[in-house]
Length: 178
Image: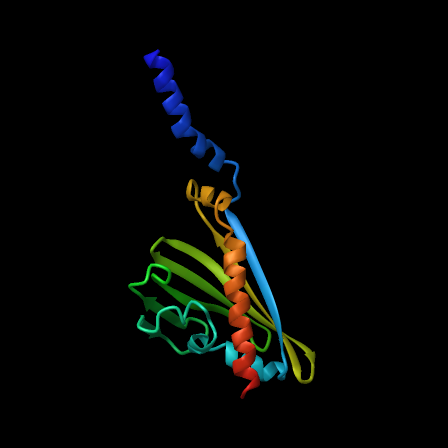
């Protein structure tokens, strides 16, 4: 009887780890907005990481967060860091990894707290006409095994997609007002 009970406990403990082996470890989110300004004006705004303070939901979650910067904003290698006491904001940094002038900026996102993760994001601008620009904001994330089990209980793509969509709506308001 005791052996069956211990075996049952072992199965209950092992089952989530076994399930996590079959759960995807990555997710990808993209959102878009059309801004009624020329592509050069829009790109010249989004290529500066410091401007994200004006439209990013995450940058606005804690007005008291400590920010740090290394390098020249709008250039490859620029790093914007943050530290917050709020768990939803945590601690991390974002680095400009690549710029395809007028078209796309690729970022490395390094989260240190409340969890560690290294992910990639990008912003892409596409001219729809001489005075209209489509902006695409993309985020590629991952959770290592066995944390990837959280994908079964939380809609990461939906949560991040909502934040990106809200940020792009704010970006549209800010850039069109200029």
